[in-house]
Length: 481
Image (tube, rainbow, N blue to C red):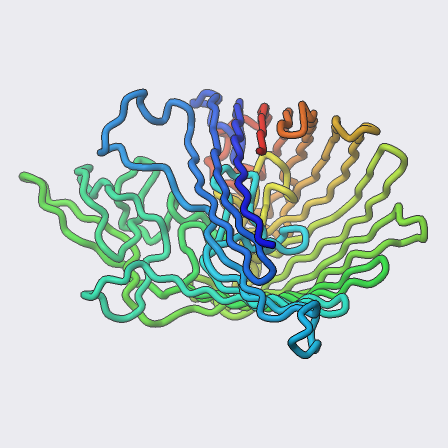
């Protein structure tokens, strides 16, 4: 029998930021604000079809005036809109039982696999992450195989030929080289400096931080094959993923404003050439003893092909963690390694691993210093961590501490050419949650980071310009209906 259901979410998060994502400059003050996510989901399920559509509104309190006009634009968007069609099910006696389950999922959807390291919904971010894709899903005797495809395009207008793709959400207006406001040129991602002026440099300092989750340059197309096999107390998974990025040329357009003649510089995407990147690897999760209280999680992924700039890739990442459950306590010791470039090497290859479309907030510290919108270090990252968490007997309350030791994975140079100290800093995160009722949960986070001088180099800051001790506090109310 078919079922129709509605659900909703309202999630507010009040934050005090004193060095989140990057060290706070000495000349700046801490930030304080409240953001809100609102979702309304309609879902339909029958024996043959599942359908889900999620409307999402994300904003900062006060971002819009109490009375707004149509010129202020809209923050409302569609987070998910997909349908899953069951092509075959072993319970259907009219078809041969050559596979337990086969389905096709089409539309805007979250890609969420394993621990979300490489493919995740980034749910911590209020906007979250979704893809416009088609996924063929198969289940059979403990095996799972998903084959996914995506192809992005900007418009379906008749006057546009070819499949050229401008791979970013470009601001509608930008300042030209003379400071005049001008509409962003079609098919171009403007390069801008910290003041918002169009810059002749090819570096996208604001729109395109280096090598992190395709920020600023979305993929043109993507294909992946995910395979997993579950055993009695173990799970082995494999992922092969290829994503392609449009090639670009540095270009400019002239803007005449009164007596001023300014220029807008940027990356022009008008080529049919694509740079193809390949990522493949394995993960293993298994219990180490019969009581199922000690678990091992390990993984290794390699990246080859070309990065989105067209450079040859030779990069990898590895993870190893051991977790133990003892009564109401859970403990974890682990080490993540993400390769980077060695400043003293003559190699022409790019060794910086890009963690694709995962959930970095979950792995490399809650203060989001690495592999998020704040960029990633040229020298890669070594993250040794220890975690401890308490969960009450009724599971209404939990509290835990995470300690991270951050270091560069590969050598970098100081301004004088000498080797840079690999140690970046230590971060301590304390997160507590309390379930108010079956629909509402309160979460409190208190985090602190003590950074070394090397962190300024890793974050491309002027030496001596920032405060080395950073703090962050947040209070989140999550209501699910």
